Length: 361
Image (cartoon, rainbow, N blue to C red):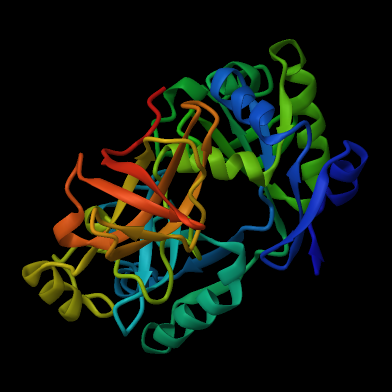
């Protein structure tokens, strides 16, 4: 099992460490509900250095990414990031990722930790046609997500970069706390604003310490993977391995907005046909009308008890104090406000399909 650069720091802070995606990772410190609320109200820091970073460069780099990614890479300007997915050849998703345009012929792709080797092999397979320079720097980079409504105020103390000028899904490369070449990205997985900071492993301890010192008066806290999950779920964000995987269609998963048929990409013909004919199932959000917590794998049934789908993610929402979840249901049962039931052990618990996100800041 791999360890991230700040492994000892997290242990010294009393973090509960668990195996996750092949890494020893902090799942919680003070507790999921406390950490969740810190991010919603003020500012918290996630160490998500397990994520993968690929660098793609050369005159054919854009063409390669256009082939393997569903979104239109050609729309990116330098300093802009784009949410994406990589379709596979059989209708599913290799991974979801963020692509950063670093320079005219230079990109960074940030992928999920559990998929680093699979993703690199997939892109490499198609790169045999394009010959771009493709390098996996995942073991060299650390990633701190400074999230929450006070994140800008905290970080602005440490840099001359005008953070308020960085638009959502844009980035700057600058100096923070005297550490140069940090990628300062206005992205996140929480819905509460903030930045993701990419730096070299050798610099992450100094960066962590500087951020926490600057955030002392704001009540800054370290946040673990458990709160990261409740925060993303309240926003209805997909988690690879739960809500999307090698078998789920990006269209059924509600990712049609990043699936652009104005270009040729892996499996685009089949997906275009699916768009025309309609998906047999759809990923929906739902709220429980009774006490209970929906869990991954629970069956979703209709009023007659007929199975119409399955839960892919679920939790007790700290913000709403209700059970919430995502799940696939047959398209005929996917409309907003449709009543459904979640099979929780022997009980069928009433729920309602609802518009996402569950939580609005």
